[in-house]
Length: 281
Ligand code: C2E
Ligand code: CA
Ligand code: CA
Ligand code: CA
Image (cartoon, rainbow, N blue to C red):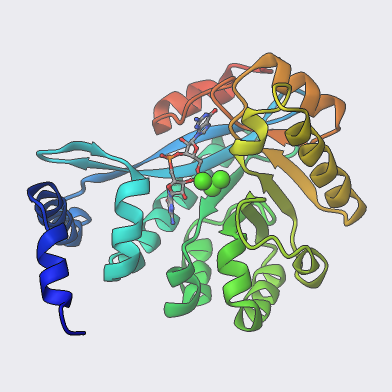
């Protein structure tokens, strides 16, 4: 490690020092942000393509920082994961969004009932008693069984393949659905699609974005949809921004779509208005 100090000195320019200071400050601020009630959740509609009706929402966390304004989850979730703040934060997200789903299901008795997707980080899966926590929340907010979907990225799944199996069985026993997020960007070993009880697969928006522009990406999307259907897995396309993408996905018989074409993520009360607004296309 000789000479490392010198090398470090060279790359440690002022811009990097600023980044490090900012990061350290975000770390500290994150620890207080829950009690200070700086987080809130937005809900992005997910539409069933066949009927054009909303089937549910994905919960997306937001941090309103007192000085920095809105901080992106792409920025603070990785820090929260590294520092362990993701554990209390993750519990708060589950609790708050499931309470909201329960309220919506009471208000709108649609058939099939509204669903909720919640993102889980790897840390949450393996470092807390997640099942106990979920049981506690579900006892408090008795949502319709089968309407909670937990999103896990394929990287998290593959890196923990051995321990994840038991966990997924425990989800199944509670009729909690499992959704693979960002499909196609990570490890992508297709064998796990057969091995694990997976209900839905979410095609990453990078593939959806270039459908129609790039023939190869359209073919990838087609192949993913066909493979999923052969394995009895539903498909959600994320990042749908144009009617052209929508029409292609519809032709492929993709079940669900989500993206700015329908709506950006919405505050809870705007999301409630969205439910009341009827079919989307
Ligand atoms: P993700 O789970 O892949 O979430 C989808 C992201 O795509 C969201 O960004 C959403 O706002 C954005 N998006 C939706 N439709 C479109 C579209 O049509 N075009 C484009 N360009 N983007 C679209 P967001 O909310 O900034 O979240 C970023 C990431 O942060 C999420 O990616 C997820 O990995 C993480 N994240 C967000 N909320 C949570 C949470 O509650 N818990 C955990 N563990 N992670 C979260
Ligand atoms: Ca997601
Ligand atoms: Ca995603
Ligand atoms: Ca993503």
